[in-house]
Image (cartoon, rainbow, N blue to C red; front, side):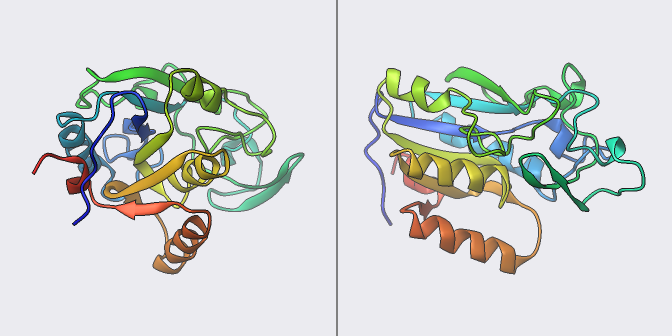
Length: 217
């Protein structure tokens, strides 16, 4: 099995949306099966030699246009056309300054050096930690990573094939050496969609690994 010699400057753990809003703790928001089980796996990685981590955090306006509640007659998981393109409608979730939007209290944040809030503009959603869903508006994450010397990313969190896969695709396209840590990611949806997304990521140079590759022997 491949194991990585981790560098304290170039390597960073990206933890995507580790928030109660995506867990059974918040059953009326947007719970993802198995999402809470990701936290202990991420904590094991954080207890290892990785030196730094960044957390992304969904932080939505209460009237965010990606919420089905803002579209009369529409239901969650239907699709609508917004000015930037097709948008899946979601249950209300990640509403700013609510308990569900907080970083999960069990996450070990000792090595977290940045928390980046995304999706805070009412009129546009943001799956990726790097670009909003218009695919043109940046979040500033890439520039920050380059400024502090990061060139290699290990991505964990919630959830494939949405925010994790969008973040991984953007990271690779922006020139970062990108790995998805499979057992430290939750999954939502049909296996076929997940497999198709994986093939697309691999075509961009993204590699899939297990968390053991980041831990001491």
